[in-house]
Image 1 (tube, rainbow, N blue to C red):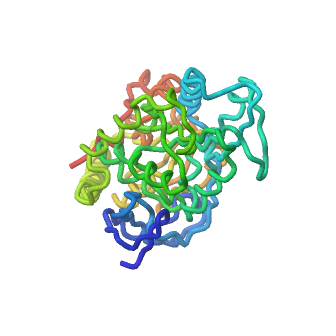
Image 2 (cartoon, rainbow, N blue to C red; image 1 turned 120 degrees about the horizontal axis):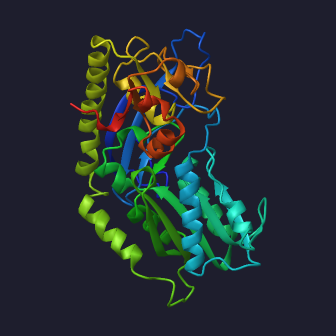
Image 3 (cartoon, rainbow, N blue to C red; image 1 turned 135 degrees about the horizontal axis):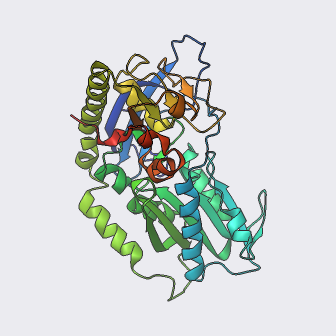
Length: 370
């Protein structure tokens, strides 16, 4: 297929995941809109030159209703900023700029509390933070170059990303979605940074989303013997064993997608046959591809709970399943709630104890496989 890498422009690569035609996962139609919803190819391609896994094409336009920010995301941000501070990378009085995710998760308040001074627009900064922001750029090379250009000569670039290694190991195939153009390994980002004269100095690993990495990078010409601590090398070794640049390792996601979709359909069919009341929780982009691939409709899943008022009253893309509010957990007294974001489990179990008090159970959608 004719595709040029979004980072290095190479045409040498391989299609590693094909989810067929899917609706835009950020387009939640009104419940009364009968559809059908527009569908588009959804494919992942792995560059053989730089190792970047990426979305092949995206004809959609971003329009996602703002979701509620999970407690797991805010806790991880607090932890990350604390670790960066301990590493001596946050100096009071220095400047900071942020490239954030459109889905939320800003670090600026935490950084200004430590004495850093935010700058806006195109101003240079001593610290540039990108928290899940870069992946939303169709032109990866240009967007990374922009961040590097704004960095002061001895500044630090902080890049946080969902690890491709975790995606492979946990078979998180449904993270592939329109609007998310890149799926990073540390290996690929080290290569990308190198083409812009940058060197990854330190790395931190977090449990968020099953495996999130934060890289600290500075210009390769900046000599700082304390900057590198072996954490980047350790991550590169781990990723080599997983096979983040191996098309065969990523192709396993295709097989797992079929098994997980079949597993969800069979589980919901069994629950219906048993007369159980079932709801979903988390109208997230990951749920869209899974529900569509598993061919789930409101007959099998009568509703998906979401805490975001902006999504309530809409329906899941590509299905007739309504998005409903958390009050339904009390009024409908579900026997089973299928959780589409496992990171939410501690938070929602605490927030909605009535589910288990009423004899219901939480079931992780990722654990349903044939």
